Amino acid sequence: MSERWVAAGFAIGSLCFFFGPFPGFVQLVGARADAWVFFIGSLFFTAAAALELTHATIDRPARDATWWSASIQFAGTLFFNLSTADVLLSDLSAKQEDHLIWAPDAFGSAAFLASAIIGYRASTPPRTAAGINLAGCVFFAISAVASYVVPDSGSILDLAAANWNTALGALCFFIGALMLARHPGGTTP
Image (cartoon, rainbow, N blue to C red; front, side):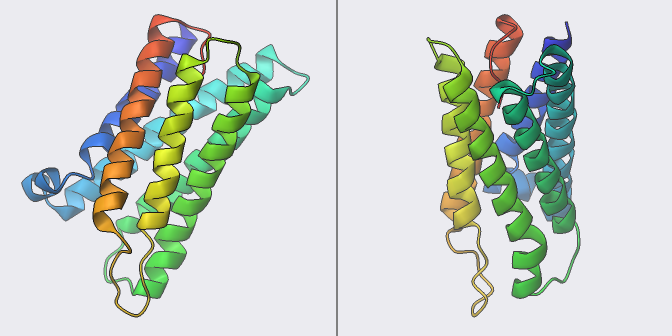
């Protein structure tokens, strides 16, 4: 039952990160509400990762690869909490955006990627869920690079790439969450 709560947390967080980057959604709800969608999604990711880390700690006190994967993933979610909360701030310079938003996002994405690689290597064949989650982490990493704010212009390096890769990563995490819900014992984002 507890793995279903983990799956639900990742699924809800994924939906927030899936819809959030679409320009039509931003136009519909406004930039401020869209920022809140991302922040709330990050909180669901953190709650799910905290549950997963708790289970990994209880089930594997020896701190094996599964525990390391869960702990690194949890740290990544905390970085996402920072980056999405800082988006709620207004009137930031390009330098402040890179420091307060982009850097935690990049660290969170790197942590997710490291966690997924460890989780993939620790999983047993077939590695379908682990592979889908790893792909989601790659998309999130690409999104983090693309969302860098160029200091000279104040514009995002590649907004379309950032948005598409965020949505694709979230879609992979959503599929992974559904797989976990249907087959407890699998690997989550």
